[in-house]
Image 1 (spheres, rainbow, N blue to C red):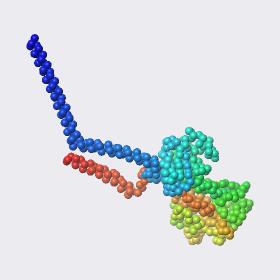
Image 2: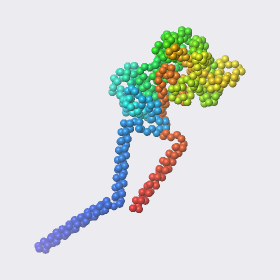
Image 3: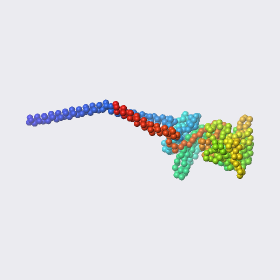
Image 4: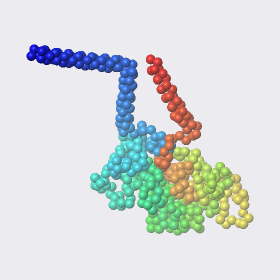
Length: 524
C-alpha cells in the first residue's frame, strides 16, 4: 500500500516537472518571438519598408485630395479647364470672351432639359455645356445658365407665347432672354448634322457645333432694344436673299419683307434692300423708292441695290441710278492679275480692293472681299457718286454682245474697274441718303458669306452699320468640330520634341533614378 502511494506521488511529481518545463519552454519561445519582432522593427529593412509604405500612402492621399480640390475648382471656375484639342473644341473664341465680359445687362440662358439628360446626348452636348459654363464664368455675373426639365415643368413655356411649342419637329433646345425679349434656339440653330443620314436613317449624326455663335448672336439680339429696321423688297422674282436676312437678324436688325406693289417702304425703315430682281420695277415703284429716299428733304435713308447676273432690260431702274450718278454695265468683269484670282476658279471669280470708304470699323481689313459674275458699276458723275470696291488694273469687261474677233487684252485699260459704288444726296443739315450698288449678287450667297477667309459678311455689315448709324459689333465665331481629337500640336518639329521627351528622355531618367536609389540602399 505504501509502495503504491509512493508510485502515485512519483507520477504526480513527474507530471508537475513536465508541466513546469513546458511552461518554461513556452515562455522562452514567447520571449524569443518578442525579441525577434523587436529586432525586426529595429532593423533597416523594417525602417525602409515602413517609410516606403508611408510615402505611398501619403502620395495616394495627396493625389486624392488634389483631385477633389481640382474638381471643386473646375466646377466653380470653368475657365481654368485646359483645352488641349487641336481646334480648341472646348475653348471660347476671342470674340466671345470679349463680348460676354462686357455685357451690361443681365442675360439668362435656359437649356430645356436637365443637365444629365443633356450631356448624355453625346460629346457635342458635353462640349456645349463646357462652352456655356465658360461664358457664364467670364460674364462677370451678367450671364446665368440654368436647366429646366419640361416634363417636370410643362408650364415653363407659357410665357414665351410667340413660339409654336406644339411643333415637335422644331426640336427646341434653349431659351436666351433679357428682360421681356427672348429668342428660342432649336437643334438646327446649335448644331450641324448630316442631313442625308438623318433623312434616310432617322439618326442624328452631328458634325459640328454652332452653339457658341448662336448664343452670342442671340444675346446681342435680346439685349438690343431699339433695333434698326431693314425692309427687304420682294415680289420682283428676286434671287435668294436668305443669307443676308439671316446675317442682319443675327446682328440685331429687324428685317421685314414688303412688296411695293401693295405697300410703301416703311417710314421707320432706315435701310431697304432690292436684291437681284429678275424684272424691272414699274414707274410707280421707282417713285416710291425715290420718295422714301428723299424723306421729305430730311434724308437719312439708304437703299442697297444688287443686280442679278443675267440682267434683263431695266430702263426704270437705270433712270433711278442715273439720278444718283451711276449706271450698271451689263457685261461681266474678268480679272487677269494673279494676286487677285481665286485659286482654281475662273477669271470671273476674283478678289477686289478696298477704296477709302467703309474700311474704318472692319476688324481685319487685310482679309479680302471676293466677287463672282460681277457687273461693273459706272460712276458717271463723280460729284454724286464714288467707287467703294475696285478690281486691279489688269481687269476688263466681257461684253454680252461680244464680236467674233474680240480679244480680252483689248478690254484691259490699265485702270481699276468699279464693282461697288454709292451715290449720295445731302441737305443743308448734312443729313445724307445713299444708294449703294454691288455688282455681284453671288458674293452674298450663304457659302461665300460663311467663309472666314473672305470679308464679305463683315464688309457688308460694316457698310450697313455705318449708313444706319449703328455701333459696329463685329463677332466672328467659327463652327466647332469634335472630329479632331489629337493634341493641339501641328508642326513637325514640336511633335518630334514632345516624342523625344516623353518616349526617350523621361523613361531613361526614371530608370537611372531607380538604379541610383537601389545602389545607395544596398550599400547602406
